[in-house]
Image: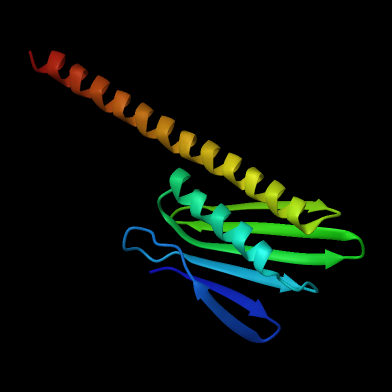
Length: 139
């Protein structure tokens, strides 16, 4: 069972989490100079649930929502098994910033997944070529 943890000042609040096939996935939501509403929690929860579709070895997702003057800033940090992916979006509206950041992170996760796929594919091709070369040398 995964868990959602929201930090409000010095208190941590636990929410119901995402399920990820037996592995635990932590989603942390931090609000800096910003009160996190139920609506934003819902958008973040549905967006974070989509991330498993692109990358299966995600350990933790950390959302940082902050306000600076008129800017609403969202940072997403995804900790995976062998990598860390980050994105940051800014706008005048927090909902818009969250949506843009989720879209940006989905794009990064797709690119990362494709990179892993092509890397493994080239290794497989090299292995097959080495096997063929060994077979011809053995004759």
